[in-house]
Amino acid sequence: MVPTTYEAELGTVNRAIIYKSGKASNGAYVGGIDYSDSYVDFYVDAPAAGTYTMTIRYANGTGENSTHLLGYNGGPWQTVTYPPTEGWGKFATITVPGINLNAGQNIIRLNKGSTGYAELDCISFDF
Image 1 (tube, helix red, strand yellow):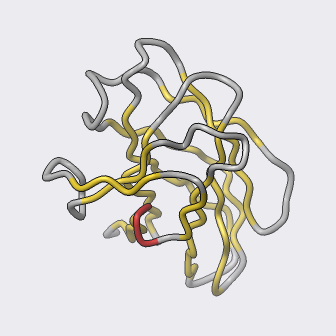
Image 2 (cartoon, helix red, strand yellow; image 1 turned 120 degrees about the vertical axis):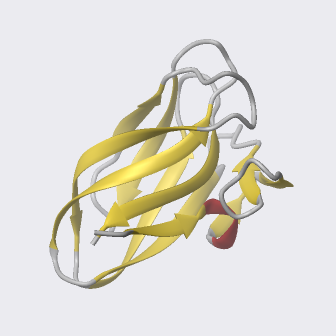
């Protein structure tokens, strides 16, 4: 399967900053997700209802684990933990299993968490 990628800078970005970078997958990423109301909404089109694994491409230059809150389709929040990367704008990936998507459009939100800071490049699913 080929991953379907959704770019952070092309989603709905609230109280955060879009940065240009040749290291980002599409030439840009979202940082400054620093406030309780900072988030990125991704609009994900799933070919069929089911449980999927989501991959997040992120950067975390804090030197410690950082978190975001993950919510989708109005369901409960869960915490996503990002291990440190080699610096800001230096990306790595994590996987988040058990994402229950509806057939068609789904809204996935990554919101400022309670610990540290992380930048978002993109998310992807293997459909």
